[in-house]
Image (cartoon, rainbow, N blue to C red; front, side):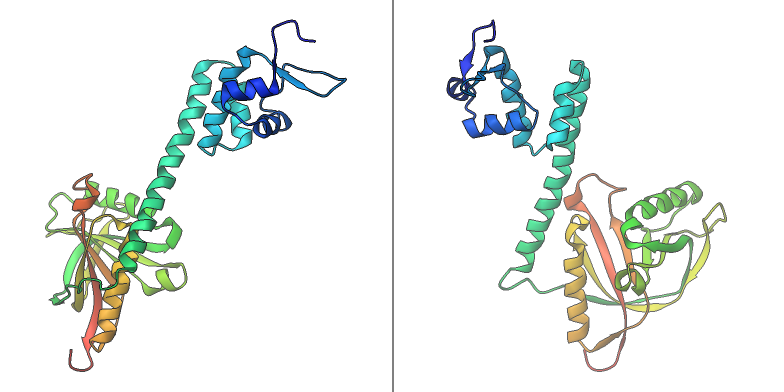
Length: 270
Protein backbone atom coordinates (compact mmCIF):
# COMPACT_ATOMS: atom_id res chain seq x y z
CA UNK A 1 0.00 0.00 0.00
CA UNK A 2 0.99 3.66 -0.43
CA UNK A 3 3.00 5.14 2.46
CA UNK A 4 0.99 8.39 2.66
CA UNK A 5 -2.54 8.42 4.14
CA UNK A 6 -4.93 7.34 1.43
CA UNK A 7 -8.60 7.84 0.67
CA UNK A 8 -10.92 5.29 -0.83
CA UNK A 9 -12.42 6.40 -4.14
CA UNK A 10 -15.79 7.04 -2.44
CA UNK A 11 -14.20 9.34 0.14
CA UNK A 12 -12.21 11.14 -2.57
CA UNK A 13 -15.43 11.50 -4.55
CA UNK A 14 -17.17 13.25 -1.64
CA UNK A 15 -14.21 15.57 -1.03
CA UNK A 16 -13.95 16.67 -4.68
CA UNK A 17 -17.68 16.52 -5.59
CA UNK A 18 -16.70 14.30 -8.52
CA UNK A 19 -18.61 11.11 -9.15
CA UNK A 20 -16.89 7.75 -8.94
CA UNK A 21 -17.58 7.18 -12.64
CA UNK A 22 -15.95 10.51 -13.46
CA UNK A 23 -12.87 9.65 -11.42
CA UNK A 24 -12.62 6.32 -13.23
CA UNK A 25 -12.88 8.11 -16.58
CA UNK A 26 -10.10 10.49 -15.54
CA UNK A 27 -8.00 7.45 -14.64
CA UNK A 28 -8.71 5.64 -17.92
CA UNK A 29 -7.92 8.82 -19.91
CA UNK A 30 -4.57 9.23 -18.16
CA UNK A 31 -5.58 12.51 -16.52
CA UNK A 32 -5.62 11.52 -12.85
CA UNK A 33 -4.61 8.07 -11.71
CA UNK A 34 -5.10 6.86 -8.15
CA UNK A 35 -2.14 7.00 -5.81
CA UNK A 36 -2.32 3.23 -5.58
CA UNK A 37 -4.51 0.29 -6.50
CA UNK A 38 -5.06 -2.72 -4.28
CA UNK A 39 -4.17 -5.58 -6.61
CA UNK A 40 -6.20 -8.03 -4.58
CA UNK A 41 -9.46 -6.09 -4.70
CA UNK A 42 -8.90 -3.61 -7.54
CA UNK A 43 -9.91 -0.72 -5.23
CA UNK A 44 -8.48 2.67 -6.12
CA UNK A 45 -7.01 4.90 -3.43
CA UNK A 46 -6.16 8.60 -3.62
CA UNK A 47 -4.30 11.10 -1.45
CA UNK A 48 -5.41 14.50 -0.19
CA UNK A 49 -2.66 16.07 -2.29
CA UNK A 50 -4.55 15.00 -5.43
CA UNK A 51 -7.66 17.00 -4.58
CA UNK A 52 -6.52 20.27 -6.29
CA UNK A 53 -5.54 18.38 -9.45
CA UNK A 54 -8.94 16.69 -9.60
CA UNK A 55 -10.70 20.04 -9.22
CA UNK A 56 -8.52 21.66 -11.90
CA UNK A 57 -9.38 18.85 -14.34
CA UNK A 58 -13.08 19.23 -13.49
CA UNK A 59 -12.99 22.99 -14.21
CA UNK A 60 -11.15 22.48 -17.50
CA UNK A 61 -13.65 19.86 -18.62
CA UNK A 62 -16.51 22.21 -17.67
CA UNK A 63 -14.94 24.64 -20.14
CA UNK A 64 -14.93 21.89 -22.80
CA UNK A 65 -11.15 21.84 -22.95
CA UNK A 66 -10.32 18.73 -25.04
CA UNK A 67 -8.69 15.83 -23.19
CA UNK A 68 -5.32 16.12 -25.00
CA UNK A 69 -5.21 19.82 -24.05
CA UNK A 70 -5.99 18.99 -20.41
CA UNK A 71 -3.10 16.54 -20.44
CA UNK A 72 -0.77 19.20 -21.87
CA UNK A 73 -1.82 21.66 -19.16
CA UNK A 74 -1.31 19.16 -16.36
CA UNK A 75 2.08 18.12 -17.69
CA UNK A 76 3.37 21.68 -18.18
CA UNK A 77 6.58 22.10 -16.20
CA UNK A 78 5.89 25.51 -14.65
CA UNK A 79 2.94 27.73 -13.62
CA UNK A 80 3.56 30.28 -16.39
CA UNK A 81 3.26 27.64 -19.11
CA UNK A 82 0.11 26.24 -17.54
CA UNK A 83 -1.40 29.71 -17.23
CA UNK A 84 -0.71 30.46 -20.91
CA UNK A 85 -2.36 27.22 -22.04
CA UNK A 86 -5.37 27.79 -19.78
CA UNK A 87 -5.79 31.42 -20.95
CA UNK A 88 -5.87 30.40 -24.61
CA UNK A 89 -9.01 28.29 -24.28
CA UNK A 90 -11.34 30.90 -22.71
CA UNK A 91 -10.43 33.22 -25.59
CA UNK A 92 -11.62 30.58 -28.05
CA UNK A 93 -14.75 30.08 -25.95
CA UNK A 94 -15.44 33.82 -26.02
CA UNK A 95 -15.30 33.77 -29.83
CA UNK A 96 -17.65 30.79 -29.96
CA UNK A 97 -19.97 32.48 -27.49
CA UNK A 98 -20.14 35.60 -29.65
CA UNK A 99 -21.01 33.49 -32.69
CA UNK A 100 -23.70 31.71 -30.69
CA UNK A 101 -25.18 34.99 -29.47
CA UNK A 102 -25.19 36.35 -33.02
CA UNK A 103 -26.96 33.22 -34.32
CA UNK A 104 -29.59 33.44 -31.57
CA UNK A 105 -30.18 37.13 -32.31
CA UNK A 106 -30.61 36.36 -36.01
CA UNK A 107 -33.07 33.56 -35.26
CA UNK A 108 -35.15 35.80 -33.01
CA UNK A 109 -35.25 38.41 -35.75
CA UNK A 110 -36.22 35.84 -38.38
CA UNK A 111 -38.93 34.28 -36.21
CA UNK A 112 -40.73 37.51 -35.37
CA UNK A 113 -44.42 36.98 -36.19
CA UNK A 114 -44.68 40.44 -37.74
CA UNK A 115 -41.28 41.92 -38.61
CA UNK A 116 -41.24 45.70 -38.85
CA UNK A 117 -41.62 47.11 -42.38
CA UNK A 118 -38.32 47.66 -44.18
CA UNK A 119 -37.35 51.25 -44.87
CA UNK A 120 -36.22 51.30 -48.51
CA UNK A 121 -35.17 54.30 -50.59
CA UNK A 122 -34.88 54.33 -54.38
CA UNK A 123 -31.71 56.31 -54.99
CA UNK A 124 -30.18 57.46 -58.28
CA UNK A 125 -26.39 57.40 -57.85
CA UNK A 126 -24.35 59.33 -60.44
CA UNK A 127 -21.12 58.03 -61.96
CA UNK A 128 -18.07 58.76 -59.80
CA UNK A 129 -14.32 58.21 -60.03
CA UNK A 130 -12.94 56.75 -56.81
CA UNK A 131 -9.74 55.24 -55.41
CA UNK A 132 -10.16 51.48 -55.41
CA UNK A 133 -8.58 48.10 -54.72
CA UNK A 134 -10.13 45.13 -56.50
CA UNK A 135 -9.57 41.42 -56.96
CA UNK A 136 -11.28 38.04 -57.27
CA UNK A 137 -11.84 36.86 -53.69
CA UNK A 138 -13.11 33.66 -52.05
CA UNK A 139 -16.06 34.26 -49.74
CA UNK A 140 -14.31 32.78 -46.69
CA UNK A 141 -11.31 35.07 -47.25
CA UNK A 142 -13.38 38.21 -47.73
CA UNK A 143 -12.96 39.78 -44.27
CA UNK A 144 -9.16 39.42 -44.26
CA UNK A 145 -8.91 40.68 -47.84
CA UNK A 146 -11.17 43.64 -47.06
CA UNK A 147 -9.07 44.64 -44.04
CA UNK A 148 -5.88 44.65 -46.11
CA UNK A 149 -7.45 46.52 -49.01
CA UNK A 150 -8.95 49.17 -46.75
CA UNK A 151 -5.62 49.65 -44.96
CA UNK A 152 -3.97 50.30 -48.35
CA UNK A 153 -6.67 52.78 -49.28
CA UNK A 154 -6.36 54.61 -45.97
CA UNK A 155 -2.60 54.94 -46.48
CA UNK A 156 -2.88 56.09 -50.10
CA UNK A 157 -5.90 58.45 -50.03
CA UNK A 158 -4.92 61.72 -48.37
CA UNK A 159 -8.26 63.55 -48.69
CA UNK A 160 -11.21 61.15 -48.66
CA UNK A 161 -14.64 62.58 -49.40
CA UNK A 162 -17.53 60.60 -47.93
CA UNK A 163 -17.88 57.07 -46.64
CA UNK A 164 -16.03 54.07 -48.10
CA UNK A 165 -17.86 51.30 -49.89
CA UNK A 166 -17.73 47.93 -51.61
CA UNK A 167 -19.06 46.39 -54.81
CA UNK A 168 -19.57 42.62 -54.64
CA UNK A 169 -20.09 40.55 -57.77
CA UNK A 170 -23.05 38.16 -57.64
CA UNK A 171 -20.68 35.21 -58.15
CA UNK A 172 -19.27 35.81 -54.67
CA UNK A 173 -22.59 34.73 -53.18
CA UNK A 174 -23.61 32.21 -55.84
CA UNK A 175 -20.33 30.33 -56.26
CA UNK A 176 -18.25 31.32 -53.21
CA UNK A 177 -15.78 33.36 -55.23
CA UNK A 178 -16.23 36.60 -57.17
CA UNK A 179 -14.94 40.05 -58.01
CA UNK A 180 -14.86 42.50 -55.09
CA UNK A 181 -14.00 46.20 -55.28
CA UNK A 182 -13.36 48.33 -52.19
CA UNK A 183 -13.26 52.09 -52.70
CA UNK A 184 -12.82 55.47 -51.05
CA UNK A 185 -14.33 58.58 -52.66
CA UNK A 186 -11.74 61.29 -53.25
CA UNK A 187 -11.26 64.22 -55.62
CA UNK A 188 -7.82 62.99 -56.73
CA UNK A 189 -7.63 59.17 -56.76
CA UNK A 190 -3.96 58.14 -56.58
CA UNK A 191 -2.05 55.24 -58.13
CA UNK A 192 -0.04 53.48 -55.43
CA UNK A 193 0.46 49.75 -55.03
CA UNK A 194 -2.89 48.10 -55.64
CA UNK A 195 -4.74 51.42 -55.31
CA UNK A 196 -5.88 52.91 -58.63
CA UNK A 197 -8.67 55.14 -60.00
CA UNK A 198 -11.92 53.46 -61.03
CA UNK A 199 -15.03 55.07 -62.46
CA UNK A 200 -18.15 53.57 -60.92
CA UNK A 201 -21.04 53.73 -63.38
CA UNK A 202 -24.27 55.55 -62.63
CA UNK A 203 -26.88 53.25 -61.14
CA UNK A 204 -30.29 53.25 -59.55
CA UNK A 205 -30.32 51.48 -56.20
CA UNK A 206 -32.90 50.19 -53.79
CA UNK A 207 -31.17 51.14 -50.52
CA UNK A 208 -31.80 50.05 -46.95
CA UNK A 209 -29.64 50.48 -43.86
CA UNK A 210 -28.49 47.58 -41.72
CA UNK A 211 -28.06 48.71 -38.11
CA UNK A 212 -25.54 47.07 -35.80
CA UNK A 213 -22.92 44.35 -36.26
CA UNK A 214 -22.69 42.36 -39.46
CA UNK A 215 -23.46 38.97 -37.91
CA UNK A 216 -27.02 39.02 -39.25
CA UNK A 217 -26.51 41.27 -42.27
CA UNK A 218 -27.68 38.35 -44.44
CA UNK A 219 -31.13 38.78 -42.87
CA UNK A 220 -31.24 42.39 -44.08
CA UNK A 221 -30.08 41.25 -47.52
CA UNK A 222 -32.97 38.78 -47.58
CA UNK A 223 -35.49 41.41 -46.53
CA UNK A 224 -34.24 43.84 -49.17
CA UNK A 225 -34.31 41.15 -51.84
CA UNK A 226 -37.91 40.29 -50.92
CA UNK A 227 -38.82 43.98 -51.13
CA UNK A 228 -37.24 44.19 -54.59
CA UNK A 229 -39.23 41.19 -55.82
CA UNK A 230 -42.48 42.46 -54.29
CA UNK A 231 -42.10 45.86 -55.89
CA UNK A 232 -41.54 44.57 -59.44
CA UNK A 233 -37.96 45.76 -59.70
CA UNK A 234 -35.40 43.75 -61.65
CA UNK A 235 -31.86 43.24 -60.35
CA UNK A 236 -28.96 44.31 -62.53
CA UNK A 237 -25.30 44.45 -61.56
CA UNK A 238 -23.24 44.00 -58.39
CA UNK A 239 -24.62 44.78 -54.96
CA UNK A 240 -23.13 47.89 -53.38
CA UNK A 241 -22.39 48.44 -49.70
CA UNK A 242 -21.54 51.77 -48.13
CA UNK A 243 -20.30 52.27 -44.56
CA UNK A 244 -21.41 55.61 -43.03
CA UNK A 245 -20.45 54.23 -39.59
CA UNK A 246 -18.33 51.09 -39.24
CA UNK A 247 -15.58 49.36 -37.26
CA UNK A 248 -13.09 51.98 -38.43
CA UNK A 249 -15.20 54.69 -36.77
CA UNK A 250 -16.20 53.09 -33.46
CA UNK A 251 -15.74 49.90 -31.45
CA UNK A 252 -19.41 50.06 -30.47
CA UNK A 253 -20.91 47.56 -32.91
CA UNK A 254 -24.45 48.66 -32.05
CA UNK A 255 -23.63 52.07 -33.62
CA UNK A 256 -22.53 50.64 -36.99
CA UNK A 257 -24.62 51.56 -40.03
CA UNK A 258 -24.22 49.77 -43.36
CA UNK A 259 -26.14 50.84 -46.43
CA UNK A 260 -27.00 47.99 -48.80
CA UNK A 261 -27.70 49.11 -52.35
CA UNK A 262 -29.42 46.64 -54.67
CA UNK A 263 -29.09 47.73 -58.34
CA UNK A 264 -32.53 47.92 -59.91
CA UNK A 265 -34.54 49.30 -62.76
CA UNK A 266 -38.26 49.68 -63.01
CA UNK A 267 -40.15 47.07 -65.00
CA UNK A 268 -43.57 47.96 -63.64
CA UNK A 269 -45.34 50.03 -61.00
CA UNK A 270 -43.60 49.95 -57.62
